[in-house]
Length: 235
Image (cartoon, rainbow, N blue to C red):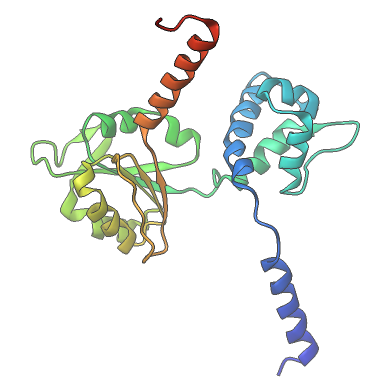
């Protein structure tokens, strides 16, 4: 039997881990930008960079960069800066790029086809295994080298292949049903482009709701505001 001191030590360690402060959402949202810019620096053959140099590239203060990276241990060395390859690798680990996640795309319309064509997934360590649709005319075919299955096969496929990510490009009326099918099959995360807010609290799945229209309207707002400041708006 374990000693009381050993059990107490394990309990205290778990409590300390649970008490660790959560990383702010703003920091998490900046991590992909760090990853992107560091990747570009690596491609240029750069070996190291200071927080001051990185701040100019990212348009974030050097102090903010240090605070962000300190949330995960710092990674820098005073008087040297950051080893770009090492930092890129660490951020890749934090973002799950090295985990070998797999994905399926549900909906083989224009957006689904565009996502099947892009090399974005592979560059971020995600392998697309299949497309799913209800159109019998394309079921069984391949789109950009990815086989199209009938949506009725979704549950069994996701469960068998242990799919990690489901990409939703289906009509919003079908989004919840398809998302629940994936979640019940063990899919861990859903990237939702279905133009509707999805919340699946009953199952352990992470949902990222993407609204392209919202992004466009924010851009329009910024243009309109700038025009008004510059005096270029309609009288």
